[in-house]
Image (cartoon, rainbow, N blue to C red; front, side, top):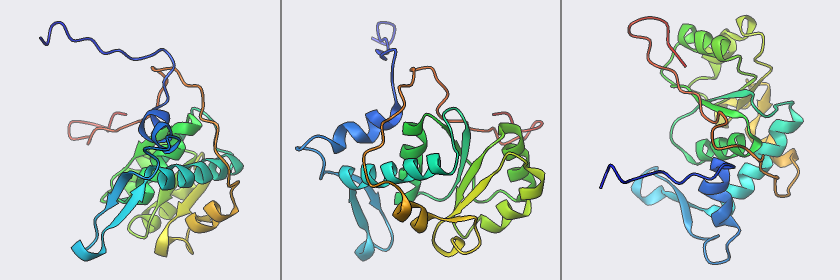
Length: 196
């Protein structure tokens, strides 16, 4: 059975289209749960595909307004939460490259990866904003740090303001090839410099 299995991936493929938009535009699926944000058991929040896509569209428009272009790297330094899913969908539909980085990284680990990838933007919350800002001067390509929650006042751009000021219309997903770069993940660097 395993020998006979073959992936059937179309030549043109956008991960955000497959993971969010195709569900958000279907009348029978738009209100289905896409993301469950587990807080305390009684406080969990449920987000629909329509909600995920609307926020991703606004963030993608906002990223374009900030100068982020197709193929450029955007660091996502956040825990698992609804806004992290929004960030991935926005970056992927833009045709940019999502670069997940651990919130546990100190300035040196962030600096190496941001420099190596030539990241142009970083999206973070209060757990990583100070570390990101501390390496800003040595990461010349890093034009914008977007802060969520308590990080909003210290970052270049507040997440809420960016989404509120963005075009409230669908974002035309980039026509990406199946083998175009989409996600850049770095190794831990235990045997040498991290490789991405």
